Length: 314
Ligand SMILES: NC(=O)c1ccc[n+]([C@@H]2O[C@H](COP(=O)([O-])OP(=O)(O)OC[C@H]3O[C@@H](n4cnc5c(N)ncnc54)[C@H](OP(=O)(O)O)[C@@H]3O)[C@@H](O)[C@H]2O)c1
Image 1 (tube, rainbow, N blue to C red):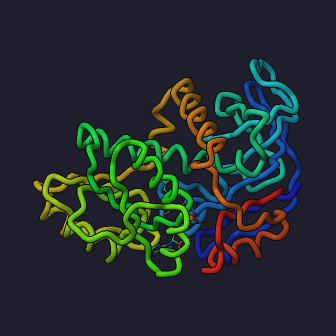
Image 2 (image 1 turned 135 degrees about the vertical axis):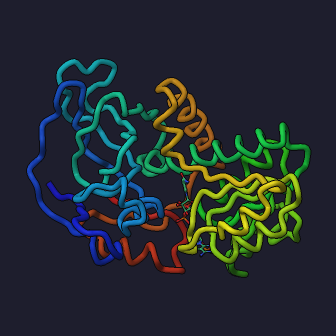
Image 3 (image 1 turned 60 degrees about the vertical axis):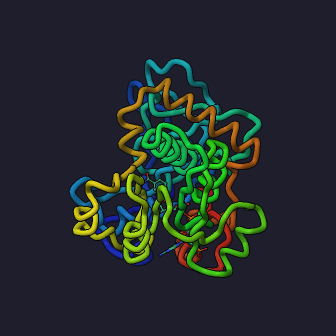
């Protein structure tokens, strides 16, 4: 079978290779899953660069998110069936034709969800729930507070705008270009590029743009960083200076996933599936590539003309 593999850290377009390997057999408590669709997310590419090298062992197969169909059951697996569609979570490895994963890390997908939407039902929706919960917890409510969302045209940014409004906040969409602002305005009636001071910021950009927002955040506000699309973190000296005035925190879905119980995770998947059916948690697909076309997919990922998510069909 074909799989993507990383044997050295570096630029994803240079270091992610493709190779043919033998399929392994599932052990006790494990299942074999034929991957039908896998997403390409920014968070798949960051570990490839070596950003988390202390917790990333080489070689590894990238891909944290996707949907597959169970093709073999290991000994002692209950509650899952052959041909059932599942979301295998908890570790990378989805950019390959077939995957072995503990049954305990597989979550059933309802029949009415397409493979494309099921493949994007995990990382962004579940992170968006956590982020909105984090601001709610900070303010003990919402009451019209203005919450900035950076990279607001991203898949998760769009989800956050809706979820924040649903929770009673006033979302403020922050984007880097007029073209993105124009695209966003088609489906969003709130503020775009609103003036400071904001009450809170959910930031996926970091760097200079993040620092500028942090400086102007109102006293008593909350700043949650969950990405660094600029390639830089916020300035730690700035965070230290405003320590008494602004609550700064990082939020990583993986920390929650590895501490939450299976019942809690399953409940969040139900919320995600419902939001996808309703439309506000559905993500736009730009292109579906075959896995053998991975170099073209990685080039498209960096293309400013990309208008939605890229999926792989291994
Ligand atoms: N912490 C977590 O657990 C977690 C979980 C999920 C996602 N995330 C993070 O959330 C972010 C978005 O993920 P996604 O899947 O929604 O991405 P996506 O749909 O691929 O969208 C990314 C978009 O962000 C915008 N962007 C890129 N670089 C930027 C920059 N330097 N400044 C401002 N905007 C920039 C671009 O839109 P324009 O070209 O239109 O500006 C780009 O299309 C990523 O950083 C990801 O790592 C984190």
